[in-house]
Amino acid sequence: MSKKNERNTKGKIITAAWDLFYEQGYEDTTVEEIIERSGTSKGSFYHYFEGKDALLGSLSYIFDEEYAKLQDTLTGEMSCFDKLLYLNCELFSVIEDRIDIDLLTRLYSTQLITKGEKHLLDNKRLYYKLLRKIVTDGQKNGEFTTDMTVNEIVKLYAMCERALLYDWCLCNGEYSLKQYAKNVMPMFLFKIRV
Image 1 (cartoon, rainbow, N blue to C red):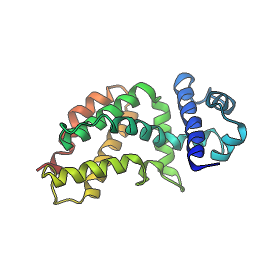
Image 2 (image 1 turned 90 degrees about the vertical axis):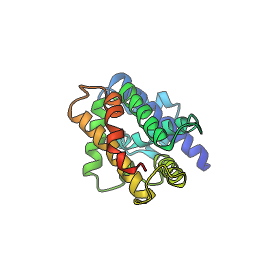
Image 3 (image 1 turned 30 degrees about the horizontal axis):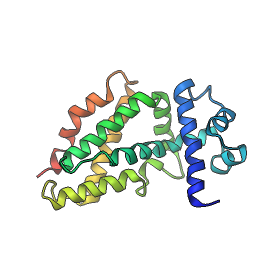
């Protein structure tokens, strides 16, 4: 099987699983339903995942799918700072609208206790590549400080996003994540601007 077909098959399984998790809840979703919805086979499912719990770590894949779509909507008229805020706002909108808060909470808890791969911190993700490009461009055009490295700024941005998500989970989603982030992300990131 080619790499592209492998990615497509794995992606179908992940997308089907998260759609089902959102529609009927994690506990009420079976592996068989995921296989049926994804149009794949039991063998394919177990080739990529040990079981349903293993899918919790795949949320970063869903996030990166959203970033791939958003990447095409970034315009040259937007400042680099506005691009960062736009990406944050759009992703948090997707999280509020499509990701069950209990699943998000479960994902964060698994990332805290896992001994293996921490998907959210994988620097090879599209998320980090896109952030590095925006920050590099912002430093080149004099919009962002050069007192910090690109990686330090990206780490700060990602840490701020995780903090907002974590707090939203702790508060059981009692407020709009997107609206709150619109207010506080500019304050969190003011140090990177020139």
